[in-house]
Image 1 (cartoon, helix red, strand yellow):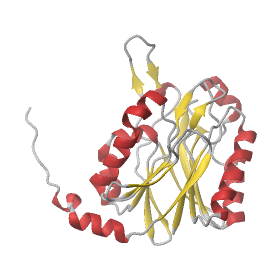
Image 2 (cartoon, rainbow, N blue to C red):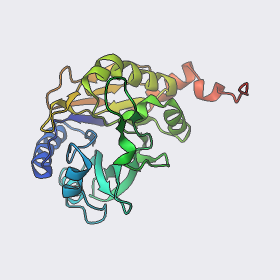
Image 3 (spheres, rainbow, N blue to C red):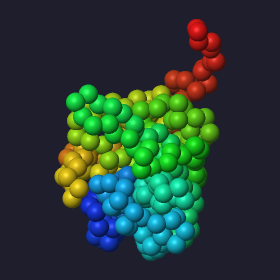
Image 4 (cartoon, rainbow, N blue to C red):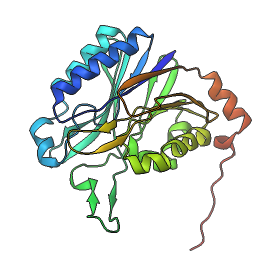
Length: 272
């Protein structure tokens, strides 16, 4: 099967973002993709919660998810919206990843578990939890005979999630993201390769890239990594585009047989 990652430069206008997405998904489908992953905040890359409230509604009846479902059906592919904000009853949002099947049906969705709350020296505190509610459940789904595990951006810094997904049968793990440039330069490749190596899994990471309408700059460099940690496809810049790779579960079996980390793991006590 051919898997594709779409790199975008989403702005604050959902209609324009969906138009850009349709063109990129069409390109991926023409190149033979069976599965297409889009980045984090595909639908709208808003600057703050007030802007999100103007465009983000509940999951049910969401017009942008409906448009994505129709796009999956038109091309007969699995279309995985890396994430979009979904309004919740408490006034916050879920950062939600949604997978559609080739018939346009919704197969699974995942809410980003790990939220970035930090006080950075010299800067104002950044509290993602003020805008978003974190999820509490790891999610897998079937893509043909292959099992997909779902993560989003900051999740990649928490290997326990990837370990749990691999133990639940995931052979590929999706990581849609909107990484900043400094952290991307320092950590993007090494973290994603590590997650692939640790779990013996394929990793597919679709990124936002470039300078956005909200003033943010993201790193780009979308990646597809094999279970041995080799980068098999990469966008070498931050421009919108598509990467593809042939994916097979045999590579997973071979990697896990050669380095049986999941089988060799043991429980241990921690000193108090």
